[in-house]
Length: 126
Image (cartoon, rainbow, N blue to C red; front, side, top):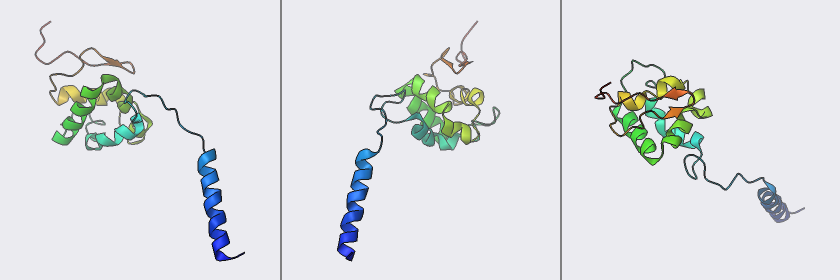
C-alpha cells in the first residue's frame, strides 16, 4: 500500500470512530452546559480554603465562588461535591463555609448542599 492510501485509510478509520463514539447527554446540568467537574477547575484558588476551615480564602477564591454561586447555588453545590473537588482533597462541609468566610452578602443562606447547610449571615440576629 502506498503512503497516500495509508493516510486515507487512517482518516476514514478516525472519522468512523468519531461517528460511532457515544455522545454525552445534551441536557443542561446544575451548571448549565458546563459539567460540574469542569466548572470545579475554576475553584483551584480555593484548594487550601476547601481543606482547612481556618484558612482565609484568597480574593481569587472568593471571586470564583461568588461568580459560580451567583450563576446558581445548585451549580456551586454540584461543584463542591464533584469528583474533581473530592480528588483535589476538598472537604464538602469545609468548602460550603467558603462563601461565609468570603463575607459574601448574597450567599444562599439556609441552602442545603449534600447534607451541609449554609449558616445565617454574620449580621443576623436570633
